[in-house]
Image (cartoon, rainbow, N blue to C red; front, side, top):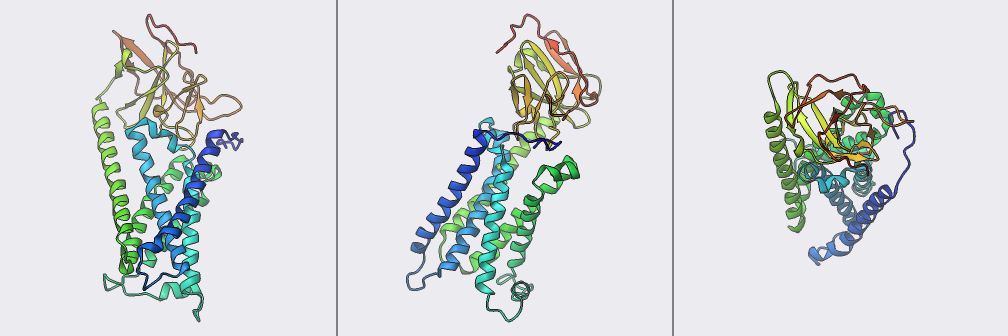
Length: 353
């Protein structure tokens, strides 16, 4: 859907993405249920319902770990950008898996409780004054609530209703969900686990998410610091450094970012923030003459920042100038949808493909 709720047709990439997600999830659950019993003491077999809840619980943790790795990986290497495509479906599926895990837990441990199952869940463990035996259930409940909220508000109606900035801020709650999930596993699973395999996977996953985000953040900070200038037009780069139909992101004095594109012997600049979810347009490329956001495929004409009809989304544009082969950008943005005459690359042979 566009911001105006016009349907965007599905393509084969979307079908492949969702099909791979479902197949991989089902395959993991089946393999876990088949292989996991071999890691337990045969003298103390684990009941099938417990195996199921562990299968879905570990699957949800691994899925959330992978989701949080996609962002920094895509910034470190463009080849991971396709994984960002339709990532919301990944999150919704993760929420469903986590909800099934919680359902198994409640129906197994509290089904015969004389009180309501959910009341019993909240009152069965209140040992807040000790580390071993701490009520880890609360961490899991907190994570599940966040995942449900994010899955429920994933539709573009909420994106438009809340505005992209507020919607994106809300969905940053995924990090709180992951931190709480890590605590849930650390305080819960390891109290009774008799196999170290998942412990290695769990610690490795949490460490991987942390390291990737630290590396990505350091690169972003270095780029931001190197891009600030006191006043006047901002030097972007030499025209020879611009890749054909690819974006180059420049940081402006106020901290905003612009995306500069070279195409068919011309150069244009527009905001780096997609009108859909504030996706990084500068990390996308030109497809059929339009700057295409790498997150969900929203498109904008480089000359005026407007989406092609019948869509109505638009982003701010920037004025450019050139001197001795060096491209400069005016840090003051034009109103969204403003046409700006593109720079013509001297002696350039435009690619008309």
